[in-house]
Length: 334
Image (tube, rainbow, N blue to C red; front, side, top):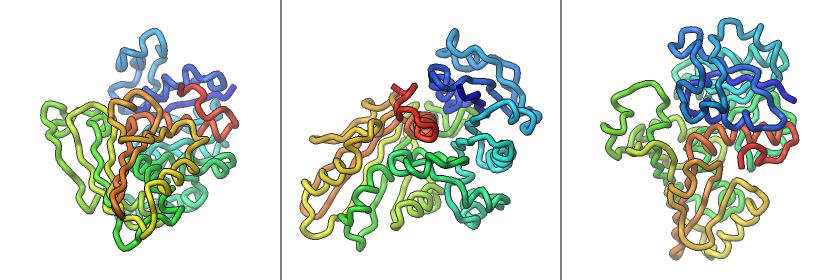
């Protein structure tokens, strides 16, 4: 049994992690923690997330001494802000813990990436070099040996799962960059109250045009340039990405279907559509990424959907942990 800690457990992704780990037969939730300054410190998780009442009634401990707490656990999930994960992860790693970081603090092995896109200077080049990017379907072998797993962002997960088979298979015409238009629910902004993230205030709108930090994350790990435009929708959760590409001459819809089948036929948390494209309602509350596509001549449109809090965060973190420790990939997720 692995003793497990969730830091940042009061947030939406943290609560989903707690629900998954509570029913995991090989993991024991040793503690749930929040910032020592958090107004949630001392409350029960089920007070903040009533769906967990009678399921996970553990208190949220103020994190005052990470090094001391690290001595009591084997596995740590960091559902924390980027700067917080940047400072905390090395403390737990030094104690020998395996760390799954849901923030962006270790996702790209370029220190300049953080000063440019995250607004802080990265101080842990050694761990940045060792971190394994946790795109679970594509990193199985590397995950099995990793001590620090950087769980991908929610937008990058849907975008890369949709594009990577096509890129690796050489199906795309590199003269035209893939254009990713993706819409996310407001839960992606977190639990902290914000007028801009209120469902009553949100109107479908793009943001971060040409400047969003997920664009270089997607491009860095795909190895090709992309155009990425995120949108905020007035719904609670989920992501739908519509991706426009150009195929190389002679590539058919059958070739695209075969590429996806070869990549994902044995991957239980990616579901492929033989006809049509997925809708958001197919994945909300579930740990899947659904992918469908349409071809007209050399033009290809791919649609990928996922729950941003699950396959885009908590479910993928647990999936990575299952791979890391040799459990079935879907353990506790289905």
